[in-house]
Length: 442
Image (tube, rainbow, N blue to C red):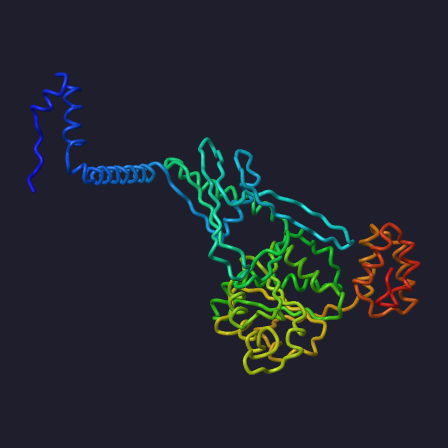
């Protein structure tokens, strides 16, 4: 097949002599009258040219993006994720069209409830202006990946700003962290296990003061002094090759103030509390060991009612023991090869006689203290605390208390009586006899 030729003379004759006329004629000759274009070759060439141009534009825009913009990705599993969302929910210079609601519901002991709604940035795009720089915030939720511990989808927050303003990312995160820590300042955070990790349970509690829990004379100071001595003896333990951990067992009848005193200890030391439920069905030896080795900094591990976790230990073929963890698993977690270092563990029980001697040996339980029912010392101190050092009525109350020969009265019962008669000491004196019946309602 012969190659098509371009008739120059034809182009000159059909043009008006001007350059534009010649260009028009050349286009008609080369494109419109060319058999290759007529057969589709021209369209192919045009398409190829457009594709090349499009690819060039995309590469150019990508190059410009990399040179001018910078991204910061914050995954939902990172601690700063919740800090940033809380910070952004309170940040004024933002534009959000997509919001999510977080409801904080608190049920009070008197039956009333407090509900607080917080509007936080939801999935979607948001715009904030921080220190003169604009940042695009994109919160994305995965439709396929789930957090197996909570069943919630994984999320990411991506911040985009000019490359020159990238240092502002650190300032944003630091400000979000300070805001989160300020909320907890002067408070005690209660952690509970959530899958393989510790998570705050509810809102941080106001610190409980040591003076708010009245134990028998000298008992509270004895325990506090021992804990403080342990905290400053890390070098002594390490130099002698002794595992740096200490276990405390508070035992005694119900309502004697064991758990309340542990909260007061945490408040005095500015520590948090990690509450671990050994009876949880999904608790295994491996998970227990993992949790005890990943306790948040400055936290006390609390195992309440330790006797109840293994009071029905029954061997089974496939699951070790019927309770959440095996007894040997607990012993190894407390004092095994893989047990945690720098750990303070408090255990409570109402029935110390049910505890296995293997659990009570030194290294697992190093300090045992009886927290008993109210002594005369505690009765007096509690009355004076509730009624502003009213010594006259206190003597009347104590005399009647002793005349009735009251014994085995818990501090919880006394507190119930005093709370019922908040501003009426005479009413408390008149109702002393009700303390004879532990289950009596005031």
